[in-house]
Length: 372
Image (cartoon, rainbow, N blue to C red; front, side):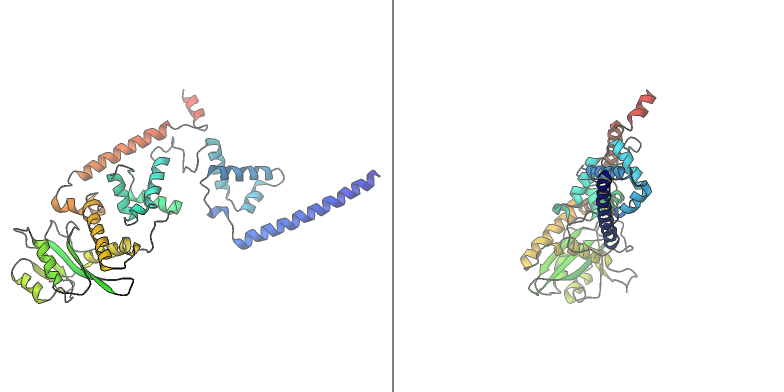
């Protein structure tokens, strides 16, 4: 009787093993076909890491660790790194704050994430956003650190389009009102009609001196803008850099040039440089702001341009000016800002190191006891 019962148990166990093997085959094939791999997935939540580590530890009672990691497609170095993090109790930190006190704190990383993903700053480039955060006193970290965190955490900016890369070289002046750039760009509205945006930008400060939106193409608008930009000038005689468009070569503009108010140079003809500085601003205006909004009427377009011009001139620091805005460069009111930002950056770095050095965990405590 006992032999018969044992035979039944053996048959039942064999059937159960066969079912488990069949199930395991299906799981392994599914993993291979889907391309699943833990090596390409981040797990910032400590609870998920602990769950995976417990599953691995339970499997090691019957399977070698190497086999378990191969099934999960988890590298040995990452597994042991997670084991160290489990002992230290740190949640998704690149290294121990005590041994690397210069790294950003969790609060600073969360602040960077909030600004990168915020709708409020969607028109601000990431590099400019890093300097703006310093001006606001939120986070003092370089633009390289911001780009690194964005790539590492795969944060997405709330944008609809990707702007092209900026030009690298161009003509540069040494003082305001030495060189101006003027140009006209076409903007298509949702109903298919066209709007024309005219603007004058100062080469030295990148400040927009004058601009106008019109529903029709009127070449005489360029002369009107130049008169507005030149109002208040006494001894300056700006050099106007233009392209060969009819809005830049007409009787109204010719009259201004002949009066001696300014002199005109044709880009890539009279000089080897292009008119790319204002073209770069067109690109930033469109891809960083206009294309993120509904362009339905000329009046709404004019309001959007007015907002961005004020942001560009008065609020957004330019990367070429060490944190100064175009208005501050044009009027010479921001000379102390680079030094102040540098001092604040050093102070923030010292506070960060002090906070990180004060952080302790189970892994740091034994070394403290030995030191004492």
